[in-house]
Length: 541
Image (cartoon, rainbow, N blue to C red; front, top):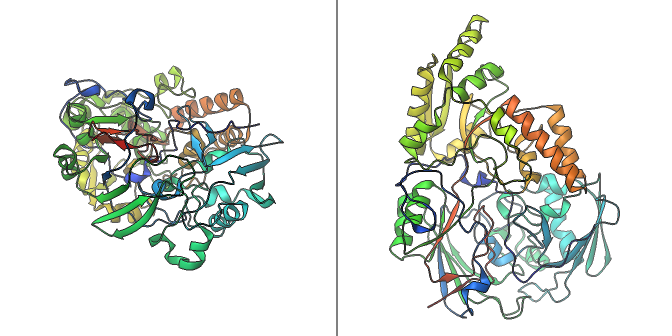
């Protein structure tokens, strides 16, 4: 197996773990359609999901500063620390890159090959790539970084690194990875953004030695920009890397990232010109931006998306009848009208309709809205001695969702208690602590591996409902291990079908992660998780 050398610029897709939203769901918005043309109804369609067409944008202009509004403050620039960080790719770049089809290709690395169908992988590096501190990005630098993920169990990439049996520098610029078992998609884990865990964001070993555990505040990489300063809750700035490995790039002189957690404020900032780019998380930003002729939008729905977690370890959702009752009692048309202004991007399957792993049969198998059937399932559960009453937990930003579900469940004979938590409490005390019966979450992804594994595999790191099916585990392992695309596709299609029967979560919407820019911002190169490659970005002013 061989991966072709990278193109100068290729659109990317990544595992969108939209867990970066930390459990918040999209909220209501004014109606609009894609491409800036008004339309007060219908699902939002994908628009420029992987970035702009560089060839059609003209000759890039060099210089200038780009100001970017983020939906949260950065926690750390250390790739071994779990957090959402839109600036990480500016300072680190990535050894590999995901393509729009969810596959992989080299980027900062020269190539990645397997001589034995995925058990051993050789990563070849470019000798011309150096860290911004002047030290070489060589085989030993990669080994040092990957070992950090192996040693640190809390790293978001630990599960991937733990599959490595040994690492060897076969020459100064080649690393041989011997895996514990074949993994045909191993290069994928070198292509993900920091949020979902990546082995491909490489920190200077000299900086690691200098800053130690404080490296998260002093990032040194080989990306297009170098770190200048970080003032928490204010801004983080980066300047052009004069020794960047791609000659003639980057185009911009400076990047300034500003945390703007409030959704309305973030939308206002891009509308009034305070920022050049806004990283949107919700439909209340996406829809007005699509309707604004003075803005440009990049958006793709991805797989999975927004859903309700059932807790398989607690009644009543350890019983399939109650899971089906909730889904059949959940009126998506009413939800879309009341909270999404009729722009809900409905989800009724694991994979989005455009995915090669999706089948129409999976969507047809998904339980349709049928309150009479839902009530009959609830009555059947009660007749068997079950208590259908449960507590629904969500964030304070989702009060409208809590009230909606409470009314929907009352209509099918279930009384529920709704409890609200602020975002910080919700993620740690509710979802990650498995302290819920039913709760909300956002967990989209583009690349099936490791996205589906995280969500559905026994012990998956976002399988918070504790769902477990040995057949699903076997199929997910088979899909990851194989080097044959046909075998992988068939395995994932079977997983999707089983999910439609087991109902591990209640899908109801795709995601609304977007990149919103001023029209003069060009060269957008993104994953649908919003993570960007910044070298080709420029401003026409």
